[in-house]
Image (cartoon, rainbow, N blue to C red; front, side, top):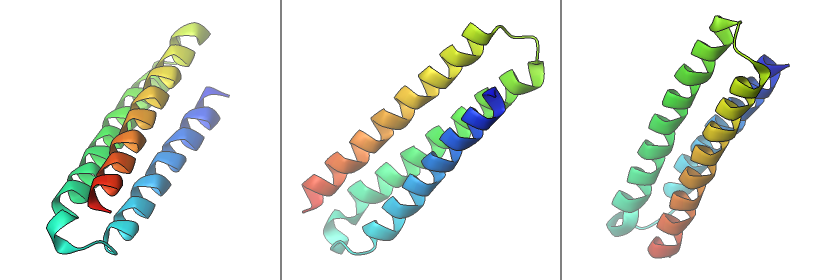
Length: 93
């Protein structure tokens, strides 16, 4: 169950980063730096979340509450990254 939830969360994260990257191509070059930085930050956060979730998944002996706390923590990081990306697009508009 945890693996399925973690995989779904990481898939959503990667899809959001990919969409952000493709949307960024539509903006003027003078604002491109803000958006590129948001994309880079989102991808880096996704890599860190993936490492953390994989480590927990491999441990196998973690309590359900520890696994759920990790999912909650990585979801919060995902939400912060999305908010930063939205802010970058607003500034670029």
